[in-house]
Length: 470
Ligand code: GDP
Image (cartoon, rainbow, N blue to C red; front, side):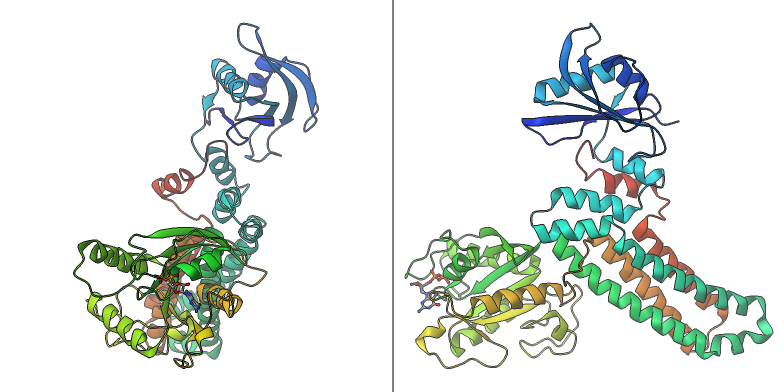
């Protein structure tokens, strides 16, 4: 039996109205202890005095009861809406605790909604993402996930996958006909269709992570190439220190920008050049680290010699033979033209965008994959913004983007890997058992996106990242 939880549901600090929320079997009785036991219509606001256990007045406000199961959590829920005075709201929580409630853990209301089947996991996570959204685009994307757009796509895939499993399992039950069943075009086609749909969903989920959670973009390049000026341009204000002396930006400078709806953190790094100055060397090491952790690297150069120097420095720093000089994620799969890139990377390098700055000085063009801009005059900056956006989202985040999390991406990647293994097993004429098992594992991975998760610790990990009262 669940106990009754209480928390301040409105934001921290003062406000016109503050909300304390109760959920659980004793919610209505506890609210009655605070606001009096008058019979109340469900979902109807009643104006009442709120009193502490000793009868002292805490506040005057509204009581709204949401009897189970028609509530957010699926349990009896009561909202006490008082004035948004933090001390009064805390006194209300204390009064509820004195009457038998327990203070909620972060995310516990959403967790109960999930456990009671009111929301799936993607939707519950979307609530947290909506609350944390820093741009209107990311808020809308979270809302689409909350409304079930992401979950519906996962369910569609699950349905098709279950359909395919039924056919393959039939081959196990009828071993005499297994070759016929598994070899049927309907099976291979269904699997190919599933793989394609899973790939599409993966692209959209990856874009959804960027739209929902934001991205980090590192600016790298030789000293004086115009990184700080470009950052100011992209941010629309003068933050980074701009000077004509090389080597000014010795540490990392971070700026949060709403880039056409994407929350992007730009990191302006120290200029990359080989130097004996220990401070600059440290700055370069940090620049390299920032580039490694970024979703996208903007590499700036003003001429071919600088471009070659950048390539050389990165080759020196990168001991992993990782391919780099990639200009976009989509091209990354096929075209590794820049840099050495002979060995496959163990973890994928961020995509790169090569930018030719200071183009107002009519420099010779560096090549087709270079984006010409003048940070000083602002020319080409809009095109650069668009290029950053589409590179980050691999073109998969249109107006219908939904918010997603790394957890979802990893689960869909796992599902795709199992489906791919099933395809290989099928092609190489393996038995139905093996194919069926790969499909089962694929379904399990896909199911974990929306919450077919048995492990409590994973649920705990997910909900503990929420705020209290959500
Ligand atoms: P950083 O060291 O890479 O951060 O370079 P800064 O942003 O400090 O710029 C170095 C110098 O280049 C400054 O004098 C800027 O005014 C100049 N600069 C930066 N961007 C441009 C540009 O697009 N065109 C021109 N002509 N000069 C620029």
